Length: 448
Image 1 (cartoon, rainbow, N blue to C red):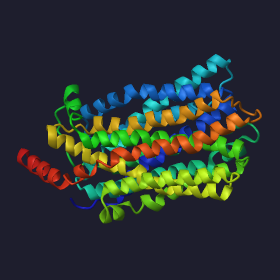
Image 2 (cartoon, rainbow, N blue to C red):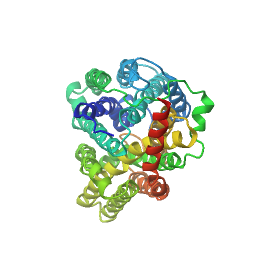
Image 3 (spheres, rainbow, N blue to C red):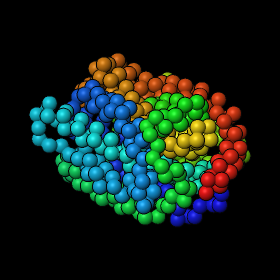
Image 4 (spheres, helix red, strand yellow):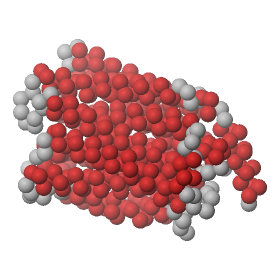
């Protein structure tokens, strides 16, 4: 259980930097791009987002089974950084191209590029999680590596937000379509470079069983794996709440507060999550991982309630921005902990069933939750706003104002509050970790 090197730690951050340089655009700006640049209705944009996430219900477990059956000289997870970085960059770029088509053809083009991008994102993002158990067997080192990963994710997303829409508009000089195309091409090239560096530097030192498991074997690793079920339930609810908040924010600041100048500062506050994420290894030494996880979620709910108070007090910008910042600060713990403890659920599955299905468990427990939760979190606000009568560049009615307040404040608060419930039951499985590690090490030693 020796410490990982700084090279390994920083390299583990690189795939999330590269991933967020494109997925950050997709997650934070694509609904806005569809409605305000590409000319789709807000309801159509929401349906495209939801359709892509529905397909993720199929592609996430399929990818997981593929990862568990991968056999190469580079390992099981690492080679996918090499194989998929090019297609990932290409379809991230194509998602922001605006061909001059009829409306139906526009919808088809948007749907195809978005869906293919998300399928590839599952393929390249899941190995970032599934490789973690192969980098170290130490639970504490896994928390440290996850902290570096969270830093990479926040850095990539911050780069997108620092540039974002304003940069695309500046580059386009009045032609937003041209601006998005140029900026996304640059980000795509840098993304590829990040994944190639991660591929070169990360090594799978904890060897998994080389014999490919049948599909039924991988599914058996889910049976009775209560730690994994807790992670799945909480993560799914977290991502619905978190992405609903992010998706609704540009509309809320522009149409409710009438402060479009706050869109970028509000997005950049996401970087405040590093205030808790960077200290996670020390926090988890002082308190249990269960408690750190729960505190992160509770803090996010408190942040939403502060925003609600600001809305009720004549749209107080100071209170709203304070609550927004509080929510992002605590999101560092709430977001990082599931990625860290997923490795423990892989160990638990191997300890209980003898089957190590890192690919399947992380594909469903991380990528599916992120993408399906993000899909619902992105679609539900758009559907509610569409049903309330929101139309781009049209006057805002009291009904649409109330809808935007609900999807920005209360929908995330409800989902994040529900996400706390399964976490409360994690403690008993956390206490088993030393025994599980000792038994697995003894089992591997006897087989070598």
